[in-house]
Image (cartoon, rainbow, N blue to C red):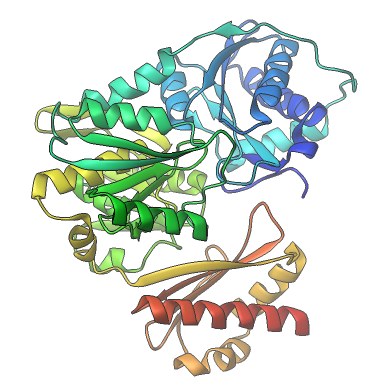
Amino acid sequence: MALKFGTSGLRGLVSELRGPPARTYTIAFARMLLGRGVLSAGDKILVGRDLRSSSPEIAGIVHAAIAEAGLEPVDCGALPTPALALYATGKNAPAIMVTGSHIPDDRNGLKFYRADGEIDKRDELEIVAIHAGLEVANRPEPSVEPVQLGSEPAAGYRDHFLAFFQSGSLSGLRVGVYQHSSVARDIIVDMLRALGAEAAPLGRSAHFIPVDTEALRQEDLSLLKNWAATEPFDAIVSADGDGDRPLVADAHGSFVRGDLIGAITARFLDADCIVTPVSSNSALERCGHFATVVRTRIGSPYVIEGIGTALAQGAKCVVGFEANGGVLLGSSVEKDGRTLAALLTRDSLLPILCALSTIAATGRPLAEIAAGFGFLAATSGRLEGVSAEDSASFLKRLATDAVYTGALFEVLGGVADIDNRDGVRITARNGEVVHFRASGNAPELRCYIEAKTESRADELLGWGLDLGRTQILES
């Protein structure tokens, strides 16, 4: 698995990132900013990290590389990615987050932020080009003592939300907090208690657990069910490793999909426009809650680009979110005389607070609130060990050979629509959706499903994975 920019940041095996690669990619990022004239010698770059085992060492390498580039490294410690991004924007400084997000502990990554927010795909290409042209000696990284910021960035993140959500607004709610190894685990508990909820920490771990909010492990699903059966909770919440994607379960311990939590968030904030990838549920256009729905390719850079376009076209309150639940607030929001500033990076705390606030404000259980959006049942899976070349060949034929695709989908009544903005998303004539997409950072073919019931979605996922496997093996 070579180092590669995926849907959000540079990722790869720790063995491929540790040492010279972390150093040289950091130098390439610094040189891009210096070359544009937005940084000068001696300016600061902020650095944060998650709780995986390799992150402190890699952060040290990043600090040394920043100093080598003639800039000053500032250590923000372990904190959620959105907390680092918010603090960096407030200080008009770029930042680097050392995190592999939800992927296993033997992998890690770097997320880069300009002073005005997350880098985009054009920035990624420039970093890669600069990196390819670097001529730097392969030598041990010198030890550097960066400026230490302590708890200031995390405190600013809490204050960001406490200025908007009213004190005591979650009083009467009892919320389980699945802490595992998320760097946001203590902030979530603190925030809920500050707003009046009874927050019960659950499942804290000393070792890193790769919680993927788009593909929960069976162990996580079982934990949620068991906790809900043991104690009365209004919801159980959590976040992924770097705290930019939420996990929310209802009072029964049933996981609520990330795109549904995103929709609940946008509704609570009275958004007139939502921006979301093609992989989010097709019910968003049908539910009637949003004047405009903008669809993008998968990945936060594309959602950010879509938010910019929506604002330029006159949208007033724009909320972006992905199927993994990460919410990007594209514009400031005013509600009950309080203002929440925009934050153009994926965030887990905002959707958690909006979902719980909806429960508190309406007096309705989360399961009932969720059902009101009319989402189709959805699931996803992946075929591992599928090369990018094999995926590309299969996807190209699906998108361009109507006879081939029609024959494959005849069992579903044929093809009603094909969306090839990101992979190939096929809506069958029976209303079901099968979406194939190559992973951006792993040798995998992913399959996303929508159907009327959970059992049918599971059945259709098996069919889709078998179809992909058979067609790739036979090609």
